[in-house]
Amino acid sequence: MKIAVGLSGGVDSSVAALLLKEQGHDVIALFMQNWHDTTGTLYGDCPWKDDRAIAELVAKRLGIPFHFVDLSHEYGKRVVDYMFEEYKMGRTPNPDVLCNREIKFDVFLKKALLLGADYVATGHYCRRESFTDDSGKEIFRILAGADPNKDQSYFLCQLTQEQLSKALFPIGHLLKPEVRRLAAEAALPSAEKKDSQGICFVGKIDLPIFLQQKLKPSQGKVVEIFQDYYIGKHNFISCKEGYDNISDRELIELSQPYHYSHNCGKVIGDHQGAHYYTIGQRKGLNIGGHINPLFIIATDIETNTIYTGEGQDHPGLYRKALFISGSEIHWIREDMRMLPGESRDYLIRIRYRQPLQKGRLFMREEGLYILFYEPQRGITPGQFAAWYESQEMLGSGVILK
Image 1: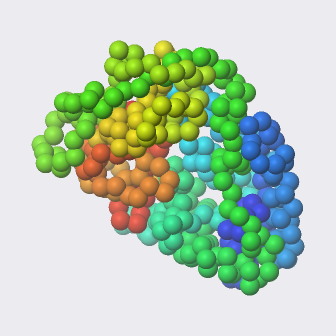
Image 2 (image 1 turned 90 degrees about the vertical axis):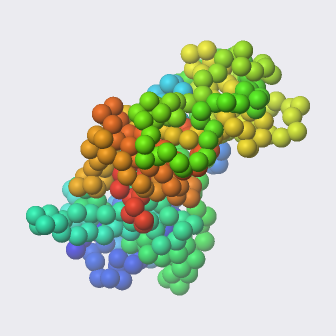
């Protein structure tokens, strides 16, 4: 079996290639360059050049062919342009999820198939399994990685059955220390390389500077919302009672974010553009005079206003429910798709590394409501909510509100 490994220069993809080679597969290394511009990046002028050099050394050490492919045009159109557009609308996208759906398991996969590969393998910490249904069709499953500290299944929450049919995740059953050990024992040049941070293929960035490439600064007001504003508000509840008999009107009300105006609080400063900020953000305001840190609790693009609250337990950071429009709902397991009127209990994650949260999904004609058993911190439009049944991720969707 011929397998193309997306060799990034990191230890995870290196060990993925090592394991496949040891299993006797015909392995080729394929390094992708997806970004050239260094505007706003915090480390180095051309980090991808270092990554490529290490990837080539790893391929040489393993004795496998090395190929290079420049996908920067596709990445710019499908991921970066999407990022700018989302931030322009006051939403916070997840470019890593988009990169996997649009680049690694689409454009990159097609390049690998042209090289004669049967599958593409990556260094993601997740597992793929399959079974045959009653009609004889093979159904693919995405399971959480064995390492609870490194599970990366969330980043694959938009993959399709067709994409999964060509995907392999060779290190999903391993813990990170085991991966480091295997790399060291094989004397791989990436054995001690630190894990990458920041946006996939762009790196760690200064977000306002990065976004200023297309989104210009615009001075607006910072408004502080005080905790007494929330007395009697419907969103801040934590009981489970009544879920079985909840009405559609209550679902709509619970999924509505708080709406603020300048009259709801006190103007405490200025900012350079609401589109540079995201819900839950702590750094970047540079406003003093508070005992506890200030957090962004909402942004208003139309009025160019940022709303803040003092303290990490501020009620404005927490919400009980969210809504995903019908066009944004994606089922990995199409055979488990919900129909309007159905409700199911699942485990839910609204960001990477968040522990799975208990909640109930309500499918309606207009879309999907997710009601949590406990209020959730930092529900952010533009991010992805993914739902799981035990260890298996079943689907996902972009949070509308």
